[in-house]
Image 1 (cartoon, one colour):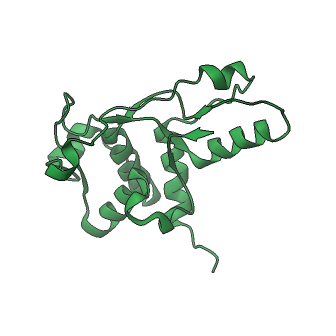
Image 2 (image 1 turned 45 degrees about the horizontal axis):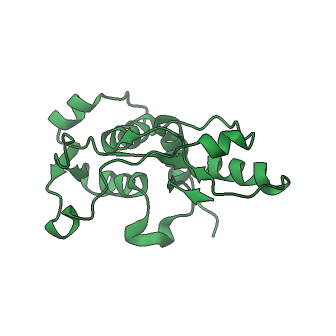
Length: 168
């Protein structure tokens, strides 16, 4: 299995390598804004894209293959690229919904400075991947026809989990 940008519960131990959703959640709660990279690699501010997949969907794929004898390399992603802006908007709006507030679109959140764009660090520029998207051909050929959650749904679930009291 080749996992794409997995996000969801119990990833805090990954530190800097935790998901965009995890960092956006913490930034917004601490500072009232989410920082994303400004335009780079041919993409506008925050429009760099990743294939984000919610951990529940990864578990479903693993369970699908647990009793099926197959071999090969299988990409485990959603099969769609979504922007970092999508993640930030989803996190902020899920947090707003938890307080009973209505959500806002990207432009409003940018005008309100809830989303801020920062330069891509020099040390990262040459290594940065501005776009990833899983090719699900092999996965689908192995009869794995799971419908994967879009960032908006997975992130809302994740934010609800992050807000819930966690057992010790």
